[in-house]
Image (cartoon, rainbow, N blue to C red; front, side):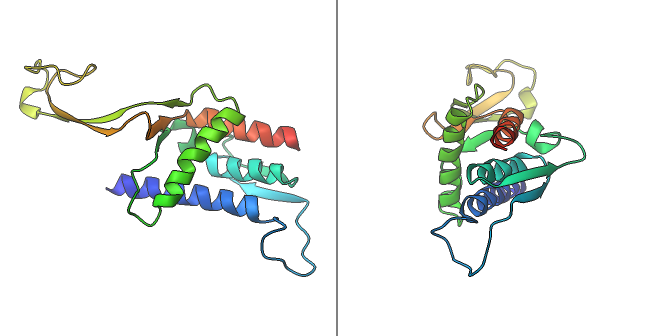
Length: 180
C-alpha cells in the first residue's frame, strides 16, 4: 500500500509538472499584464520529471538547463520498473491523471521512438512458504512453478504497459537538447 501511494504521488507530480510546463506560457492560459516568458529555465534534477519539464518547455520554445550532480537518470528514473497502469488508480482522486499519464507515455514512446515501450499482461502470484522449492501440483504460471499457490491478473495488454525509464528519460533530454 505504501509503494502504491508513492507511485501515485510520483504520477501526480509528473503530470502536474508536465501540465505546468505545457501550459505555463500558453496564450489560452491566465493572462498576466506585462508578463514575458523566461528565455531560459533552470531545472534541478535530471530524472524523468526534470527531463519531462525540459522537453515540454522546448516544445514551447523555452530553453532549459538541467542541473544534476549525478547525471541523467542516475537514480530512480534510471532504475525503476517502468510499469504503467491505465486503471489501477480508478476511483481515487488521481484516477483521471493516471489515465492521462498512461496515454501520454504511449504518445511519447511513438514520438521519441522508444523501442522499450510495450504492452503486457501483469499478474500477481501467491507463494506457499511451506512448498517453496517444491514443484506445484499444477502449473499455475508459465514462468513460476516452485511454491506457487495461486495467481490473478492485475491487468491486460489493454491496461498495462512498460517502458525502460532510463531510455525514456534520456530520450526526453536528448529531444529537449536538440530543440535548444
